[in-house]
Image (cartoon, rainbow, N blue to C red; front, side, top):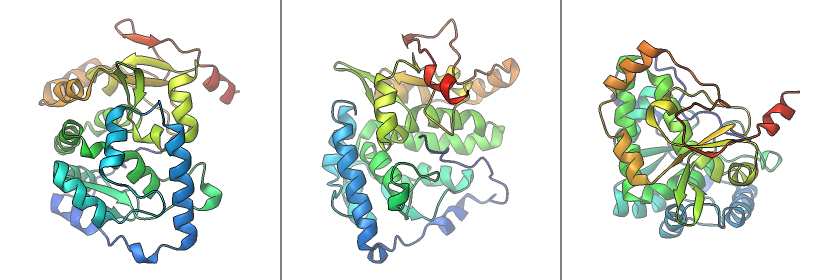
Amino acid sequence: MSKPERVTGNPTGFGNPDNFMTYIVNQGWNNYTTAEHDVWRSLFNRQREIIKGRACREFLEGLEALNIDENQIPNFEDTSKLLKQKTGWEVVAVEGLIPDLPFFKMLSERKFPAGNFIRTREQIDYIEEPDIFHDVFGHVPLLANPIFADYMEAYGKGGLRALEFGTVKNLARLYWYTVEFGLINTAEGVRIFGAGILSSPGETIFALESPSPNRIGFDLKRTMQTNYRVDDYQQTYMVIDSFEDLFKQTYADFAPIYGELKNESVEYSPEDLAKQDQIFTKGTQEYAKIKNT
């Protein structure tokens, strides 16, 4: 199953960006129980096997470079020391989903907010709110990649601008289809880089191998016009050419694009294909049809 969007779309009451510091809490690493460490170990070992041959090289390199512990829940301080050396990022603990403004502000200052809680054994296959496994295993390894790290900082700064234009909905779609559920075209074939996929055993296989979803080339404006599924596997996945190209397409003032989006009012459903799409796979949508009957 998919994870809910990382930002809430509710910035009300947080006019001062410096308020983001109030959301950062102590991870409380010493308070984790043996059972919670066991859940981490089970999740890590299962997912490490599933992502072989499916995750992009940059993700696997980050996982190794940050020495993310397979046997116990990582200590954010230890992970941040290695991450800072590589790209200047750090992992900070939060208690759950946070509003848009502090979320964007954290990213703009190279602080990645990660939930400090872990799912129970009964929730091991699915949890509605992103937990420490989703956030650390799924997101953090790519922050060790300099280009992706720059993209995430730029996204945070772009988010602060989006709040001014009232276009957070459109920017959230960009995050969803790249950071959470993005695919990348490589010399070895299409691979996964999105955290929402890489932290989900079922979607890791579905995203690459199922005939059901569409897989189309990433286009910035098209992505910002496309709705998505929050309650199940995606019906469409965007495929980037490279992290360099992703950064190039998004490292710009979005004001002209936001103006176009408002004037055109074009919206795509999650399953739609457009005539301008670069189609890697035209999905059957069979999975979604069965689920909706």
